[in-house]
Length: 309
Image 1 (cartoon, rainbow, N blue to C red):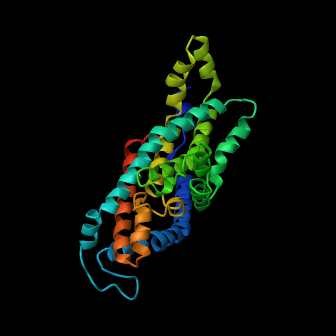
Image 2: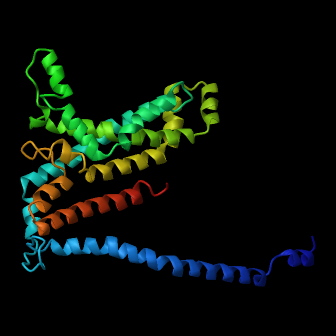
């Protein structure tokens, strides 16, 4: 190709200017049409409630009339000096550790076993996923009856062995273990389905090639399956931590925060010690602390751990 022919073949700036300009105008039109409604909804239903909660946290207010009794940071000082809130914060941490060390590895193991084309694999998936479909309040009520010493499964088992009925939910030492059992039962299937979706996206040719090269099943899992499943595992960890921090619907019907306020989470503490006692300023302070913890984790985790996903 000669120099003249090559120059004629190249698109000129004029050829690109009109489509590019038209695309820019279309983009601006989309922004003008869709951004203001979305921004309005975000402002009204997200930003303003958060700002109001932060403002109410500086008042001793029962929710009636206008907040007038300004007390500064006393709500926050009382909050961090409250042993019940400290226990609630620890309980949230225990749920997070339990989810990361027990629930997620178990969900991954079951997902690996039933992700293939096994007979009845679809039924296994449905059985494990059904608890997640059930409402949290209903799950809490069901397990509350299951753990009851008089007519529940635990009481029936203990009396069958000649022992007196055992009231697990009334034992302040072991009552929180009931919460962990329900959390494992309720959300296990959700994480399992995430891992199954990730496993189905892995090219089988990679595993077949590794098997032909003499790699053992554990080596194929450790060096191929697990790295390729990394984005889904990181997403599962994110959902698990955020869900543990916001756990509330199961606590109220299952234990009601008892016995002796040993099974509260931060959200149930906000409800029982703030809203039900008409301490709206104090409950707003609890909400602000919970919001800061969740936002800090969410942005930090996505910035550090999920930045390449």
